[in-house]
Image 1: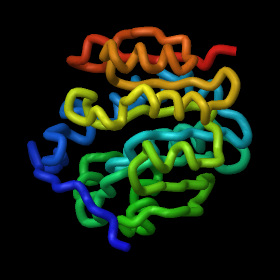
Image 2: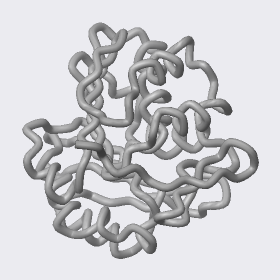
Image 3: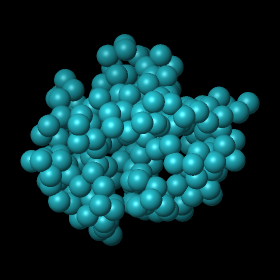
Length: 224
């Protein structure tokens, strides 16, 4: 069955913007630097990397967060593959992904390796030093059925004001339920409703400096 893709318009050349949510897929300033600040630093990575480490993500988008994390994993000299699972409702089509990747670094060939296997349908992908699974569909339905648990979460849905379905209290509880003891999350948003939902789900939540023009972001650790 064909997955429904997200209609895209392009700004400033090759920056994709979701017309469904009227929101860019990554920072207009520097998408790689934003991912490093929010999702790597926000989860204390790569310092916490260890054998069998599992990252889970809400919102696969262009795959930029994956590329940055995968490259950091390899660069830090980890043994074995990184496990990365992402939940995505509106998959980006292959031609759009390749166009979005034009402005990204090559990540030592990882960018092109991802583009070569991406068919816009998701599933499981075995790449060097990476076990990737992209689960398509409504995360409110698919995440509770997931059998895994993450060491670190990248919460990267479109803005809560525009995409509230991906930030509900029930979904944040599902995130907590699928987090290993003392596991962490990070997200670019500091919206009060999101922070309260994560706190109610069992995370210790902190508001910290955001990237670029965003004054604050949120990060936290599952309570013991």
